[in-house]
Image (cartoon, rainbow, N blue to C red):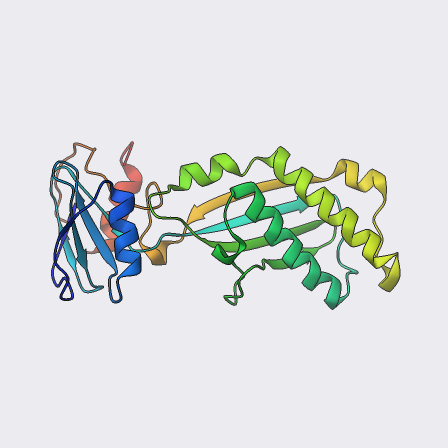
Length: 232
C-alpha cells in the first residue's frame, strides 16, 4: 500500500532502503507515516491524517514501531521483595532484555513510559515482566523474537537474581535458594503494539498477497475477514 495525503511540507527524497526511509520519517518533525518505492527508492513522508491506497512495489509504515515484550519468570517467589528491591529488579530485567535483544536501554520503557525499566506483576511462584520496545528503523517483529532466546534470557535473569540475592543478604524476608535458581524458567513473548499500526511483520505492510477485494462496513469487519483468511 501507499499513503496519500499531506506531506507536511516535505519533498520526496531518494533512499537506499525502506529502513532509511523510515529513519528519515522518524527524524522529521510531524511525520507519522512513510511510503517507499522499491524500484526507484523514492521516499515520501506523511502526517497522521494520511490515507492509503493499494499500490504495487511500495512499502509503507509508521515512523516508529513499538513492540510489547512479556517475560514470564517461573520458579522463584518474588512476592516478599521490598519496594527498593523491585525497583532494582525492574532495572536489572530491562538490562537483561536490552542485552538479549541487542538494543540500547533507552529503547526499553515500562508501562509508565520510564526508560530503562520494565513493569513487574508478581504472583506466587511466577513473575510477569513486560516492557515496550521502540523498534529500530527497518527491523521486524520476527527479528526481535528470534533474538529473545529463552535459554539466553534465562542466563541473564539468573545472573540478575543472583546479584539481587547477594545485595539483599536475606534482608526484608526475601531469599532464593540455588535449587530455585536451577529450576528457573523464562518464557518470552512479543507482539506489535496495535496503536502504532504495526501489524503483520511489525514495521510495514508489503503488497505480497494476491486476494479478492471485498466491501465491508467498517475496520472491525475488515480485520475479522483478514483473521479468517489463510496467510492474511
